Amino acid sequence: MNFAASDTFGAVPPHDADDIPQHTLKILVAGGFGVGKTTFVGVVSEIRPLRTEERLTDASTGVDDLDGLASKSTTTVAMDFGRLTFSGGVRLYLFGTPGQERFWFMWDQIAYGAVGAIVLVDTRRLTTSFASIDYFEQREIPFVIAANVFDGARRYTVDDIRSALDVDPQVPVMLCDVRRPEVAKNILVTLVEHALQSSGPR
Ligand SMILES: Nc1nc2c(ncn2[C@@H]2O[C@H](COP(=O)(O)OP(=O)(O)OP(=O)(O)O)[C@@H](O)[C@H]2O)c(=O)[nH]1
Ligand SMILES: [Mg+2]
Image (cartoon, rainbow, N blue to C red; front, top):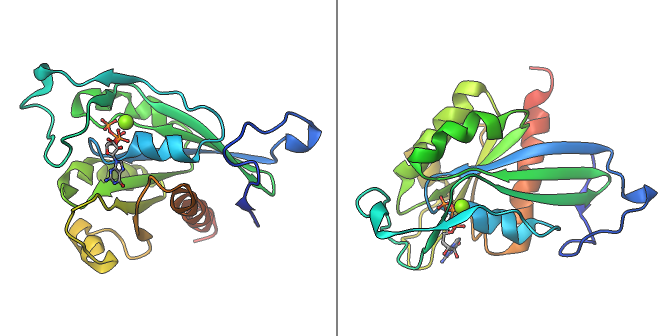
């Protein structure tokens, strides 16, 4: 399958016959608390993303690990939703999961029918994304690892991150800044290619 980033990126595409996608794929954007999931969905979505953000309050002190997230003031309490269409007729529906443990009970509903997942990790707090990795490994849902390199975070190589997370060798691992649309779109392309390969004959 051949697809490239749509020219309509950043704008709501017109609704005409040519706009009807030939393939629609559900993709999850997962990972621990505060790794950048909502940022990711917002930066690539061609429609205004659906968000379910609520303010972090003092009640979360001691519950949420805010180390390195001093400026974080809200959190996703249900999910993020966005859409991205590639020329060639592939349309992705993006579902961002909630990061906080107390909302994990929703993952099965959000994950239903997904062809693949992006697991975002924050290299300063790798352990917060372990649960996401386990979840997709157990359900055999193809995933890629995208290490979101926050400002001031110590730099690691892809090999360092792969070995720290102990993921299978065929799982793509990338370094990224999810605030950059082209970078985030490239991760999606890598995931779709990986998911297609994983669903082929074994
Ligand atoms: N410096 C830097 N900041 C980032 C990056 N990605 C996200 N942020 C910021 O980090 C904060 C967390 O981002 P969110 O997108 O809310 O993270 P999340 O994973 O959706 O968080 P939860 O839904 O609470 O789990 C926000 O203030 C973002 O602006 C990055 O690559 N670099
Ligand atoms: Mg979020």
